[in-house]
Length: 192
Image (cartoon, rainbow, N blue to C red; front, side, top):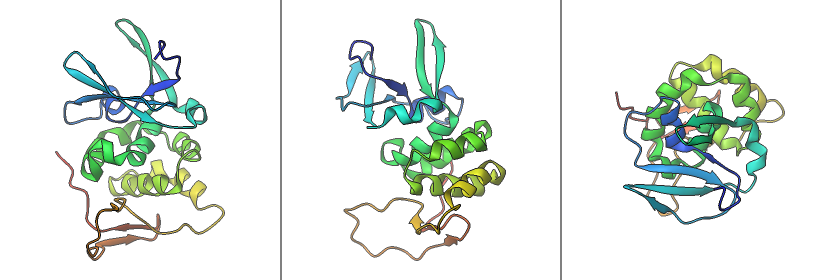
């Protein structure tokens, strides 16, 4: 990234792994940057790049991590949680995200999560909050809820974003969370 002269941070599943929150080996080294770049091969692994236009807005959620060869920037637990929902399609879907969140939730600071959510789509915050509640970490989500619902009633969102190709009739919801205004069509399956 120094060669590209681009700001970046290591994020998503790789950041979760670095925070000790993953149940599977991460197959890609996932980097978020403000330029669209093609994935590259690095030995036996792939480095994939994910685009975020306003990278500077989340700088408070990025931390430095020492490595054998120097240091790298990684997303903190709060930014990682929100990114997992923003880029759910590359994180492996709701089941993989829920599995990672079971471990990551312990590291999340509720106030930092609320502050960081201001730089994300509201639906991401609603989904993160719902899942934190479901996993037994409602106290970590209270500040987020207060911020999201402080001024207006939120529109309803589904826990899993609907795919455009999915024209089939949607199954009947198994839950409608009034607290987060999240419609759950199926509960996430969490790997133990």
